Image (cartoon, rainbow, N blue to C red):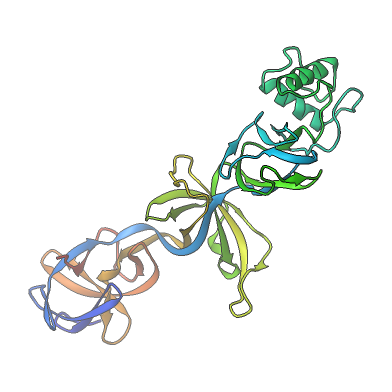
Amino acid sequence: MLAVGAAVTVVAGGGAAFALIGDDGDARAQGGDVRLSTALVTKGDLVDTEKVDGTLTFEGERDVWVGASGVVTWAPSQGAVIERGDPLVRVQNRPVTLMYGGTPMYRTIGPGVSDGADVKALESNLKALGYGDGLTVDGEFTVATEAAIKEWQDDRGLEETGRVDAKQVVFLPGAVRVKTVKAPEGKRVASGQPVMTVAGTRRIVHINLDADKQDMAVKGARVSVELPGGTVVAGRIASVGTVAEETGTEQNPRTTVDVEITLDRNADAGRLDQAPVTVELESERREGVLSVPIEALLGLREGGFGVEVVEGAGRRIVPVTTGAFGGGRVEISGPGLAAGMRVGVPAGE
């Protein structure tokens, strides 16, 4: 340990300034005076972070197929939001309607069809759209189900058959946002051909995270996302991929895992459908440790670091062992250190 008056290096902001600590407690630096202030030694969690690149987009991107064949007579515009009961597209001037459900429309639903999740989904949608006052949503096709279908078909200008198939309805999990229109107005489509690419309406951030950094991505962890323009919004890690993929080039190979982040519902992510963003992930957390501002560290002549403990009018140099860095602070340990002590730091301008 260096005594008062010995040479030390004041480590701050990634640089160093040599100073002499005098008996009066002032520091006189080579090239100018270094005025000193003090900061507290605190005990608590120390979090280090790392920034990685991500992409702002919408969740659940997928292609949409329809069972109708013919000429597209209407298609939505890019960016349009389509909800339950709205047409996804019109083929031969007949609408193909979006309904909510997790089961694809894989068969014709009509009299004589067996019970199933698709029948229940259709009944649920008809009920939500205001059809079938006496309809029971139970997955069993009944006379009430048939009557509700006919009423719905009549309102949409369709033949009142009491039967529904993929020419009339597409089941998707919820409302969608049109990303790409693959079958614009005037194009001829065939059954089973994709007519558009859609995504969910909730914004997410996607990261191709280097596989050797996957420990930084913990499902449920809070993160901050810097948007174009500098606005920072909060989010949470929703999923972390378990399969590593080769995403780089031959000249710059990368092995990555997929990470998806959902933004807080009150976060204003702007109107861009897709944009590059920067995500701040937690790379290390040390719990219940002593820490000081990084600029409180002094490089000792014999090696290692110390801090200048300020006690009343007295000052003394105490050697420390450093640990994690984070948030402008550094973990320290050493004999005689305690929370609440004051240490010297360079004063601001």
